[in-house]
Amino acid sequence: MQQQTTTAHAATTTTPTTRLGERVVRATVLVLAAGVTGCVADLGVDDAPTALTMASKDEHPVIVGAVDWQDAALLPEGTAERANANAVAYLDLPAAGSRCTGFLIAPDVLMTNEHCIPDARAAMGARALFRYETGSANVAAFDCSTFLGNDAGLDFALLQCAGRPGGTFGVVSVEHRAPRRNEPVYVLHQNCDHHADASCAPTKKLSPGRVRAVGTETGHDADTLGGSSGSPLFSRDTHAVIGLHHVGVGGTGNGRGTVNRAVPMTRILPVLAQRFPGLTLGGSAPATTPPAAPAPTTTDGYEPNDTLSGATPLALPFSGTARIDAGDRDVYAFDGDGTARTLALSLTHQTGDLDLYAYDAAGNLLARSNGVTNSETITSAFRGAVRVVVVGYGRATGNYALSVR
Image (cartoon, rainbow, N blue to C red):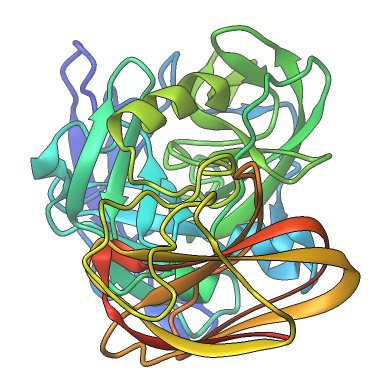
């Protein structure tokens, strides 16, 4: 959270109890006369997020025109918007005395803004709260206090979350392409109109809008406010993340302004690939490269089969057992003729988290199953050369049974 040069004057008040479904939130409000960029400052939380407010400066996230966001709790099940909303979280930052929004780009990696997490100290005690929505009585909190890194120029930060929340709430897809002017978009974020109602609860919202400017920054008119910093900007056409929302322009002290801005993912993704080569994003890299692994240490009846070109050929239907040791991966090959095939991996998750991937012969990702149970399954009508990859998450090890039927 970055302080403005103007001295902030704070006053605290305790608001009446606010109910989120059956969950009680005792809201503490901090009103800032001049203060932070993007996030919202508070005085801490109990077991649920705090409803907050702050005075807007020229570069705080803003509402553009009339408020037209919608409650995420109303999103229909089975839609892409609902699936994306599941992966977005209220990010409680007690060390910084603030809150922001974050979203899962991998099962255990949360992305937000650098101005929310300027250094490792700001990540201390950080929690991601999922299902914090209107009417929800089942908010799930995860410890996301492990600081992985950030970039001030691109205003992103990465936190690692214990408990792998993506196994429950999913991860977003990320698209490496430039946003188009006038493209329909939406932002998913944790907020409420705290300028109009200081005691409101910052539940999850979907803000529709359009791209208004392109370049090194993507200008958009989807409504946001302080606390929306770190939220994903989705393409309405593909439902993939094309930008990281971080700032607004034209605030007049009541949270209203002229445009919001996001950092295009075309600028962020190359930096992620360079600085975090082991990071597997939800819907992008490693679309052209299978999970990397050093030289194997394991020996079973199918070794050596650690590369796409050295894959073990399978005669279908296939069933067999093997083992993954630290740093190992097993690659199998078959030719798809358009018949629906089910790839099934059986394992003991408690002793080792193994994941299942399907690639084509060139290394393009076709499908994946990377949950947190004792089985992983992929079903698809594959055509052409298929490479089936079994790999341990975070160098996990374990025995497994694989079938292709």
